[in-house]
Amino acid sequence: TDRIHPLIAGNWKMNGLKASIAEFEAMMAGAAEVTAKADLLVCPPATLVSAFAEKALGNKAIVVGAQDCHAKASGAHTGDISAEMLADAGARAIIVGHSERRADHGESDVVVHQKTEAVWRAGLVAIVCIGETQHQRDAGQTLDILRGQLNLSLPEGSQAGNLVVAYEPVWAIGTGLTPTARDVEQIHAFIRELLIDRFKGEGAKMRILYGGSVKPSNAAELMAVANVNGALVGGASLKAADFLAIAKGC
Ligand code: PEP
Image 1 (cartoon, rainbow, N blue to C red):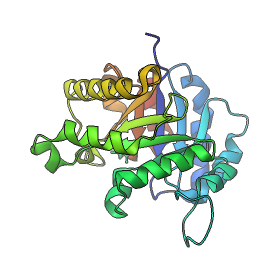
Image 2 (image 1 turned 135 degrees about the horizontal axis):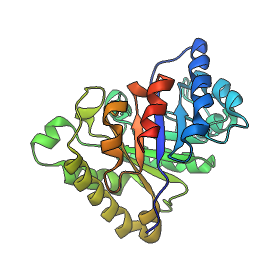
Image 3 (image 1 turned 45 degrees about the horizontal axis):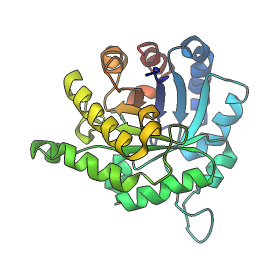
Image 4 (image 1 turned 45 degrees about the vertical axis):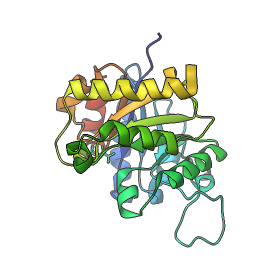
């Protein structure tokens, strides 16, 4: 099978002010150098999507995304932002179902499914996050949890061009802990098998990202694992040097 070109996606979470535009410009400046290794996506907070997207116009090596959206296109939903609005602001992809959204806002797989369809309705790529908690892992439920999340969160019509899966063990996010390369290999192989079962050839081509405490020092080892087609990076995506170094590890 052809090698899937990796994607390094940065999730800035609730970090970044207008002053951070300079850091994004530093990422853009280094992006061309890593584009042979990986595509780059930066997902700043919604307040910065439009500013970043305007800066990135004409830069072929980096695109801008967002971290969440509402399932509806518009309406009486105070404080919410639709996928259409984010597309209008210049986003090309939206993360949905991040464990922090699932935990802080009670997002269920059903909601993640609706948001994924909203992302497509706006013409964007959905990055759907799944992952087990420490408690579930200790109870030996990891594969059952992932199977359930994938079955319920991914809509019919998922294709390599409109959907990216991000496997993010909740216990590895922001903790400095990572699964072993062997664990990542087994879990990504399991996810690949489920994607092929359901989406056939498209499932074989979909990117499966690993996320959770990826940093320059561990990126090369994790990115070398079979069926790891890039990374979703939180903390280490805030600094251009770290983010670019992770991409160089692909
Ligand atoms: C994330 O939140 O998607 C993430 C992987 O965070 P970190 O890299 O900081 O663990």
